[in-house]
Amino acid sequence: MSSEVPVRFLDGGLGTTLELPPHNAKFQADSSLWSSDFLITSPDTLSGVHKAFVNAGADVLLTATYQASLEGFAATKKLRRSASSSYSKQDKTGSLSRDDSATYGKEEASALMRSAVPLAKNAFSSTHGAGSKSTSKHVALSLGSYGAIMQPSTEYSGDYKPERMRSVEGLLEWHEERLRIFKDDEATWNEIDYVSFETLPVLQEVQAVRQVMAKHNTTQHYKEWWISCVFPNDDLTLPDGSPVSAVVEAMLSDRDDEGQRPWGIGINCTDIKKLDKLLHQYEAAAQKMLDTDPSLDASAKRTNWPWLVTYPDGAQGSVYNTDTQEWEIDPEMKAKGPQRPWHEELAEIIKGAAERGHWKGILVGGCCKTQPDDIRKLRSQLATVESDAYFLESG
Image 1 (cartoon, rainbow, N blue to C red):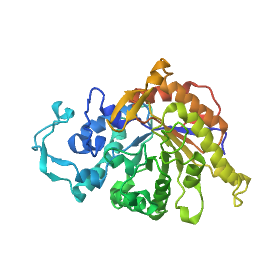
Image 2 (image 1 turned 90 degrees about the vertical axis):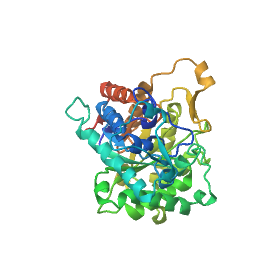
Image 3 (image 1 turned 120 degrees about the vertical axis):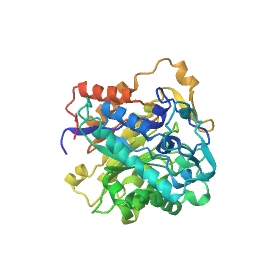
Image 4 (image 1 turned 180 degrees about the horizontal axis):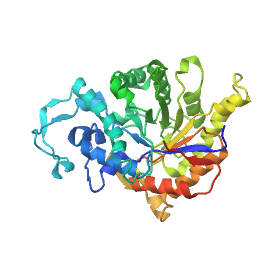
């Protein structure tokens, strides 16, 4: 492996950015779609946020499909709007007129979900040459966990219902149906550069998505893809109690029945204070797997490392309450006083990961509560740090 690790930049928190001025979105507690609802109500607003992240230096944009699902659209009342109407400021407060007698069927829902892909792609073409710091044009299909579509959401608890959705078989079927909405449309699939399975809280789901990709991510139409998990527990385990060693094994095992090996593995929507310890555990677990694999020689053990994909939240002492669906200040964190700037802390963590020399590359960004300015500052921080361990990749 090269002594320098390439670093690419992901965008930040789409939904939480929409909640801030000038967008001022007000997501309802019983919403089934969250930011994906803007695919219906105001795609131009989504486009504006995408462009802001590109101008901040993002090389990769995640589509507005994290919580999009057929179930979610089926539970969403259709929008009433005349052809000449516009998305007004009042609409952003949640007062759009909805049809109580109609929701979105499979065909309409699928078309709306697919519309998120060119929306992200076009954000690059309309911003490059206009002050953007990035020359890349990479779109990542965002596919949240099954728990992300539940009401209330359970991606932080892993409390999946019904019982079948706690099995690999049930989760495989569900993820396969959603993936095929994009995969079976050739024009849409061709515009996707990465596929991201995000915020997975249970080990069975890691196993399920690998099997889905083994079936559908064929050589002819292969997409680089990643799995990222969430670690809300103080003991650095998954919500289902699985330790990092088991998570990494489920992600990277090369047994034939384990499914396709991802291009990248990582952590998202997790407190940045936990990130450095988690990355050390990821690296130790991956190294142990490679060291004990008799099929790999010394050279293969070095080159068989995946990319690291990490985008921690920027809550800075706030905790998300899944019952109220509000961000609340953690009293213990408040008592500790001002927090270190998010971009400085993350840059130091990424520099350390690069210097340890394991990962083939690093894709880094932000999750909840991170805004375009956070990505701009992160990119600037990593650009100004003197290090021979990494370089900022563009194009």
